[in-house]
Length: 363
Figure 1 (spheres, rainbow, N blue to C red):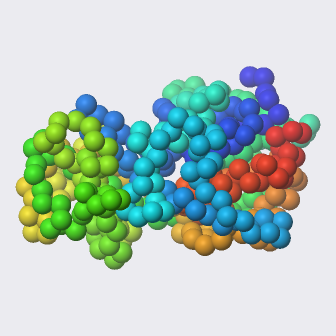
Figure 2: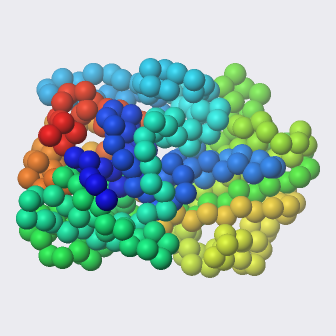
Figure 3: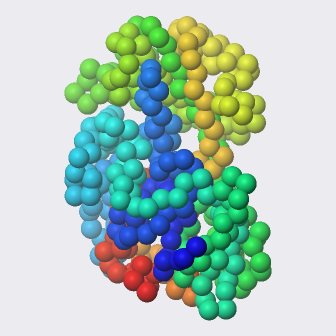
């Protein structure tokens, strides 16, 4: 296949911000845009099973100055039809059409190749890269001057190690290896066709000025719970659905026997969920259970942290950029910016507008 100057591997939030800033081609193994910003829509309900909200405000340190930014302002400019509502407090928001609508809107004009999994990369003598993809039972090669992988670090390391040996790949393997530790996360969405819960007794306050429909209990096995039926008012008026994101230790313990290959809940999962609902929530077993498991939910040791100022002047950011200039490869992801949506979007956008990524996008 003929090549552009660069392309992007993946179609999640980082890839979508890149595509919003510059024309490019996205290659992704999934069937749609979104990555870990995933929203599921069924005839009965709608829910987020990746990130469920974003924090609006973010301070960014860049070129010696610290400035306040916010994601709502960014979305008003770059996704003006996306309506966002407050949730839980005055700083957290979510799009009415689901978290997945953020990357979908940002990447709506990008050419995307779905169903292509990157298997290996090969450096040519002319300095270009040959990317080898698997698509069903076919192998496809694609030549490009540079590429921007947005995959979880463990997946990217496997690809690089599966490729012919190359000094540039070795440099990236050395750089990325300290950030290869990811947490697993199990999620379940529990659907009741008819339910009339006393939300206040459960610690939720949907009628508050800013609805409190989510709860985070650090250290609990049911670590994060969200009544997505109150968040996304779809389906029958008497139906409700509850999203559960389980703790790291719980997810690690039960990861392999949580669901079958068709994502149906295992008997073990059904029994465990029903017993917990009865004993802790005084709720009946759900009519349906939607299951998902994230093998690489988020990087546990990232460069710029999970919270606080996003320091783009960090020495590791400089090293990351210099390595990109030398190799024609520039990985993006939560290993650098942290797992939060606003850090990835506003961090990448800042680097684009400062011209620091011109060496790839305008070479």
